[in-house]
Image (cartoon, rainbow, N blue to C red; front, side, top):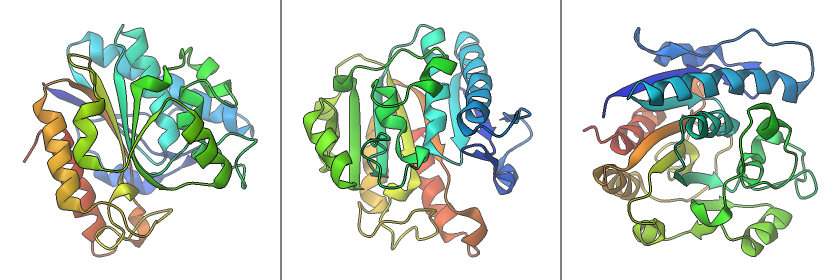
Length: 256
């Protein structure tokens, strides 16, 4: 499957200009002008544009591959897939749960809430802005998520989301023949192997084990979209984290 890469150089509603060095000439850059001071309104503009790009990409017969500075961009990707009449299972690789709501989050950080939003929990402003219907919780496979806030952990345990800590068992949670959208937050990698992260978490699966799992997912031929939340580019002076992150990313894309 031929990929169409799209880079959204934002961290939530703030420019993440360092990310633009990753783009090749044939990539699409999703960089709309943002209005006003309201964070969710500004983010909504980014994700509406991303949704348009993803929908057009799928309708043209290509696979959308999205890169951005935070996990909320998945809302735009999913909205574009829905508009193109694709209803995938969602595989979410992350050191964090991203399952907070305003009620459970100690910090109120919206970047820790997108997965909850996607299944219809918490603030639905971004979901409504891109006309995204919530995914059934049973269609979500959350891999790792080793760092959870107390209220977030309780919400996740009470949900129907498949929280997988043994990455070798992922295949058992995927419905046969369903298309798969894989979202990768690279902080899922063992922090010793990829230390330059915005929100690093100790421990985690090894890069080798993650790449093996990713290669297996790619080999199914059912991965119809991939997205990646980037590492901390400015502090990655030796590009060790970049090499680890891109190795896992390429494995998901079925590339050596």
